[in-house]
Image 1 (tube, rainbow, N blue to C red):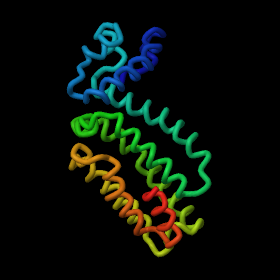
Image 2: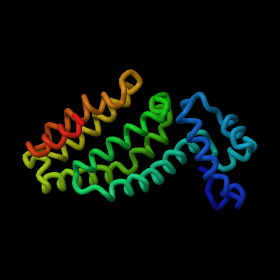
Image 3: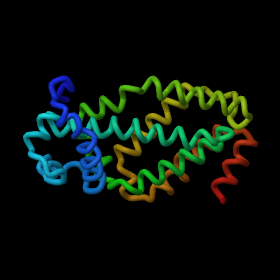
Image 4: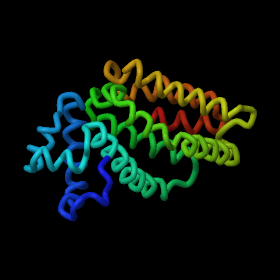
Length: 207
């Protein structure tokens, strides 16, 4: 991405507008279907200006994802602030993911694999994700919802690979995202739960 110090104040002010509009275009139509010309035309700016701010389409895509994760993370933390235990958190995250997937063209996810810098960026905070997962499971154990006799470091690796498989196989293009969660994610999660956790999870699934 072009260094911020090399951009004029006007071009800096365009960055948020560009990422917001480009995000809407990419998630609606897919990445390949949207050209830099389309983005520039949508914003009524020149393609030259767009390239001066984001040197490549991949740089723009990475900026979109970074910006989305930051803003969405803030909104999600706000939603989670009212949760009393890990099962409440699971419910909120589940609903959040369902809403997210239903507003995004499946092509957006499948076409991400063609952009190595973006994939690398998505993996850059892998260690923090692992730490948060283990912290979450430890809390669930202390609250009596998750079993103590499980190697959660191994479970985290398995969940990570499961996520990779779901994206690589593009099952989300052929099955409703809610069905994928209920038949794959929650079935796996159920095996980690205590009797108390299973009862709470089943209450949620049958609601």
